Amino acid sequence: MTRFPLGVLPTPLVRADRLRAVLGCGPLWTKRDDLTGFGVAGNKVRALEHLLGDALARGGDVLVTGGGPDSNFVAAAAQAARVAGLDCELVVWGDPHGTTNLALATAAGARIHPLGSADRGRVDGEVERLGAELARQGRRPLAVPRGGSTPMGALGFACAAAEVVDQWSEPAAPTVVLPVGSGGSVAGLLAGLAGTDWQVLGASVSRPPEEITAKVLGLAHETAALRGSTPPRPEQLTIVDARGPGFGVASPADRAAADLVLRTEGVLLDDTYGAKAAAVAVEHLGTDPALLWFTGGLVSALSPVSELPGHSTEVRSHTTDGAP
Ligand SMILES: Cc1ncc(COP(=O)(O)O)c(C=O)c1O
Image (cartoon, rainbow, N blue to C red; front, side, top):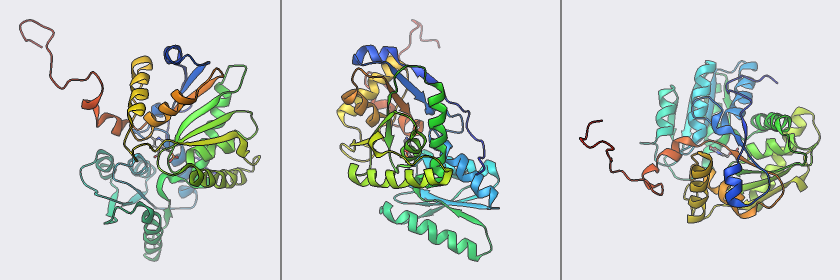
């Protein structure tokens, strides 16, 4: 298995003592995958390193994948394909106009195929169909489902598990809190943590917990098989429902948690993933050590900036004569 290096790894493990003081919880750390250093890919660069490495090892010449118009993964996939020298074809559900992530993807040279429907469940089938069509035309496609959540993609977070275990210095193992979308990141983490007594608490942002737990456990098993490591232990995983008002929409508690993280640790969290995981941390953390995994999402974190508590769009001058 060949990894195509893209990120600036390892990402920092940072103590969050100011946040801890407000929450009154045990030792609290943050894993800064918002700082993976490749475009604005956040956690997704880890999956892409393995997916692109696999595509190149097989002589692939085009990456075919997809997602929603606001998907961080599609922008990151397009940029990763570009630097690896592959073409990129993206199937996009919903309205494919006017989003920053799709602008980034097209700027990286990706071709967008609008699904013409808001039915996100049809994206993966269309990705497969497009991949088969390209193969018939003599291309060598790698077709990847939404989020890059295959066993190969999940290897990225299995490696991240080893990375963070190596960085951890507290005597007791922590509970890791992270957002869960398509499930590849948490599946890889679970596979990578099988030999430890770490716990994982996932905040499901788009699917009912039972449904995503089953998917994550299946994927974690396949990931462990692919790397020839100890099978995952389901008792290490808890996934709670963090969907709240809907995908991409933060509840007041989600916003309050994100605001607290910004005010104490200076990290900007997005409504879709980061705010929801932070709210789960605020609700569940006790006195045992914990690690809040920041996954990025900077593009959508910046979109609602005018709605941040305390923010005013009015420009205030601090000079008396109005000079800049
Ligand atoms: C910023 C961010 N955080 C978390 C996730 C969730 O990761 P996964 O889809 O592997 O569950 C995503 C998925 O795109 C993401 O973009």
